[in-house]
Length: 87
Image (cartoon, rainbow, N blue to C red):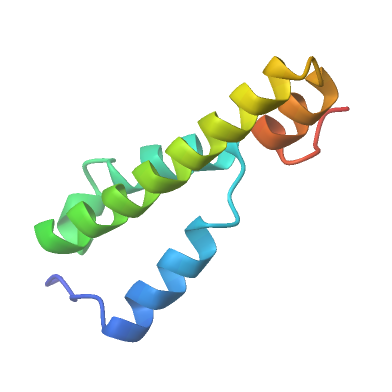
């Protein structure tokens, strides 16, 4: 099976979806796209793009967690990290 490059529409869809991920989901998606089997499906350029977008979201999640902890709002920090799951 050959690699199928992402279209611009695919990239926009991924980018938009990545912005909604909580901390745990960022890690899960990162693990999925960096699995050796994913390298058989996606081009190196597409994998770089996806990792870059996940990195941006990881930075945003980290910043929100730090702001919440600084305010001693640990419930908010947990919500940002887990997406509200596990309360």
